[in-house]
Image 1: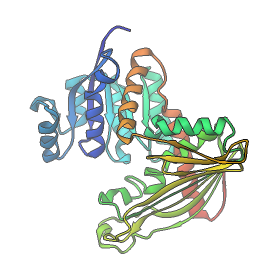
Image 2: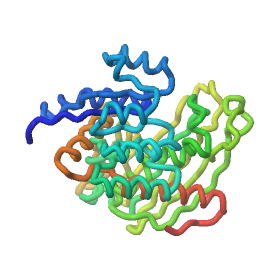
Image 3: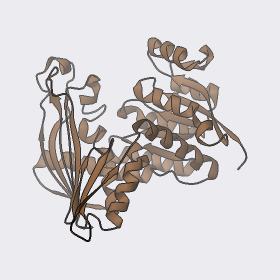
Image 4: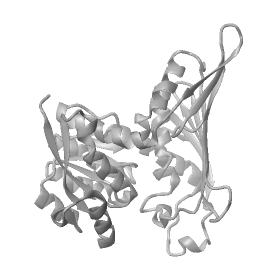
Length: 350
């Protein structure tokens, strides 16, 4: 494969946008110089964020834009990273696709299945690559956990228990039902994608209960439609495996507990304990009946780089990325089913 340069526009100069920016700038190093990411535009409506990014990443003033349409028209990118609140994923992504650009959309893909279908269909019609930012797919630990599953070290069926308990988010729009959608949309879509991948199966039903802990807290006083921020959800898979989560984004700020997060993957032959974003330790018995342990380790920073590299290779080699529109839609379908189960008090069959 001859060397190839991809012109890149990153939309959004927040934390996630800067991770994408760094990933594209480091692309040549991760592809042995075969693919280079050339930043031709960074878009944000906050001048202070643009200026800070310009100084940190060595950008020129001509590379900074306050409007994504102007950036696409002037810079003519080969690929666009969409790192804005979820409500804007599809409008920005569609505008990029109509210009003929490939697109990497941060998770979740959209707020509705109709929106997801619109961007998937547009990408197919224009013949461009659509990737979704499920960075856990690039976890070294996940590859090892999949080996534990396939080799029978854990046995089947599997129960994957996960929890993430946090205070009211500093980016309060994450609590808005119609902007980011709350944790079941914004955060747990990672696990809904991960569980399907790990179980090698499709979800068949979703049950859940939930409420809003942030209601009445001053930090979210300006938000008129608060998303469900506290929930317990059970997802059953055709394989007989089960994923179960407990979550809140509604704890009061200032508690000494900090964030409480963890994963436990349990089977009849053993248990893996830890955090899929960090490390997991497998406890099982060998043939002699003696306990043995194995550790699956992660490098969180590398996740985002591998996500960028995978999309770039998909573009250049004409392949699908590890997580595309189909995978983004499937995780969204589970998120929406969880919210429906909470709202109706009934199990949702998929």
